[in-house]
Length: 105
Image (cartoon, rainbow, N blue to C red; front, side):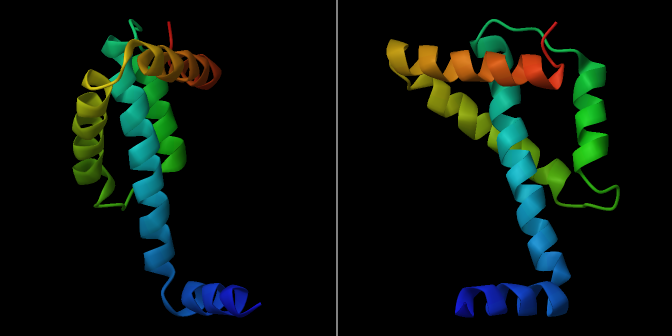
């Protein structure tokens, strides 16, 4: 109960802080998906990526564009360090997500 009250209070008095978390989440998730493109042998539809960003990132979000490249680079490093089995599992799910979002050609 106390956590809920604190979350509501934060949303009322600090709405930007909650939005920043959403921006970070979108950048993190999209960064992983973009890093998977070549690592998992996929080719993405650039217009689908653009549409996803238009739908999920506010047009006045100044942090998304600077966070995204760091997330792509970081995920790329993680992919390079994966075992074959880990990479297979990672790529299997990323292919599913890419297909579901209309990214994969």
